[in-house]
Picture 1: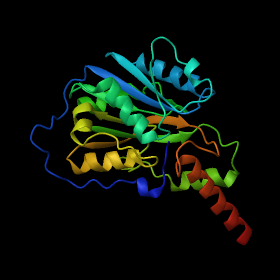
Picture 2: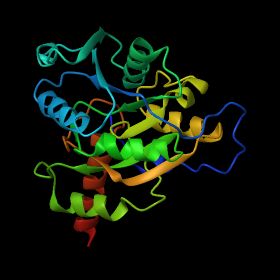
Picture 3: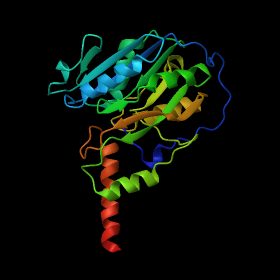
Length: 254
């Protein structure tokens, strides 16, 4: 569900902000949507990390899990302070969209929406730093993603990934595992589309075109799994496999 291929560097030219587009201001609540497809092994760590991050902010935090076609024990993992809904779309874009629709359809500018993935762990300051960006005028916060363990990959895969993964104040990466936005900016463009891959890039591109101010935030951090078989077609796992195949091919020809 996380993808960092070069196509994910979204260019957002300056445009005039449409009338009624709120700039900055107070955030009264946070809604976190997490799509889940057969994640009983990694989901507990994801939820524990979210709980730690929620403890670092001064506004209420609601976590909405969207169990999408789960056939394992994912439904038994959540605790009583997490909201759960079940769908059978097997589509990450649909899962994110339906999660926000179910939990936040009436939310306006004072609500901050954010999303991560069930195989990922957010940094303890994840929500706090997003709120700082929101309160100083950002409509969208796009953070960066690190890999928890490279044990399942060749050493060259990590080297290739880190070489390609640009960071900085305009890093341009979009990850569904590390993305936040003001609720009114989200609804203004119609929210996530029901895309099996690339739903995050599509959303941020539309928000940028609509005049949203995007913070490319290298201080908003999430670590994710480096598993070889992912949940989204052509997602992060597929990207890592391509890097490894390229590395091996180049090594043989050297």
